Image (tube, rainbow, N blue to C red; front, side, top):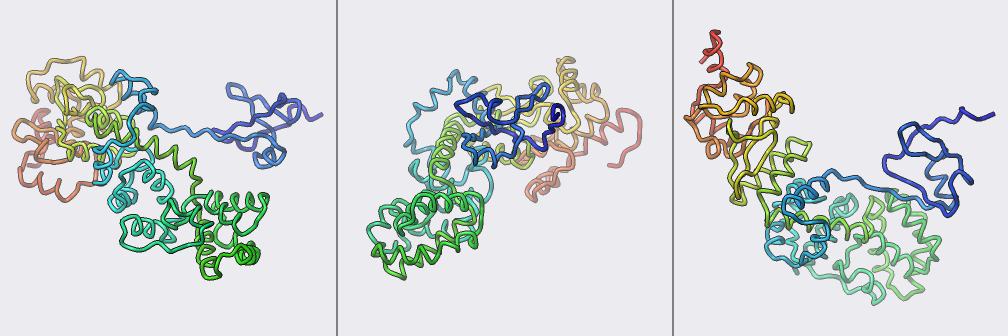
Length: 417
């Protein structure tokens, strides 16, 4: 009677269930044409029934890493053979050059890198956890950094507590540490598991308050001083704002190190490919800025050498592609490339439609009077981009006639100079 009536309300983007029995024998399963099968119940309910639930994270950045490795002639196994103590890699990260690095890109993480000054893979494991809402909002990240560099003294905790918090300078930053403190307080594993679920789902400080009385009693019976126990409890409450588990942080740190190593030792290939894969304009621009800071050369565009996307035709050099202009798709870029060779920029512009000529003006492509690689410092090749003050100053200093005015002259219309 129910055949044909089951409808899927929502499907997890990348989660799947595993059981030792065929799923269709023990749970409703619906086949969606052209897609994998889905279970006909809520994921939380299914997990409560004992199914193994696995979330698979799809990360676009790993496609970029695969392309970099292919360009270098390596496979993924090569990454696992990299030394984890490469000093230049840590030096680069300590200077805050983190754009394009797995899970470490962004200005807030860049500030943490400058403050933390990582020198070991364990520092990156901690950083993956310190950048989460709980440690950031509670001040735990600042405490960790100050104690790491010896600017403040770590409290002398009970020996049982030191076994749990010693490696993180007395700061709770991992889920496993909260669990360990609950065990010191005498909680059995079912209760510890409940606490872990609360802090792994951003339950908030109020969510763990229900265990405060039992925790205080258990710590006293375990020989932990009342003041110390309460201080640790406050850290556990702060973890209610969401903290990482250490295993998660370790894998994030390993992937972060790999991408940082590639950025450090193969800067042009890394920046070129990651810029091509980056979807956000701000991050793409910053990847290329940091490439310049590493000593690389950025050529905005060459009518006879540019490809569809960013390319690296020679060592330590990135060349802008036609498709990186807004409004220019793959087909349009192919037509531009097919008309080569061009005698000069004028010949190139004469063969461009008006829409592209306008885009080139916004891109700052030179007419031979200006070397924009040095003049603009960073390439503003997008239409309607918000220029930085240094970019505006460079354009005004060279006083180049806009390309759209040159185009008006070409097609006979009148443009303002």
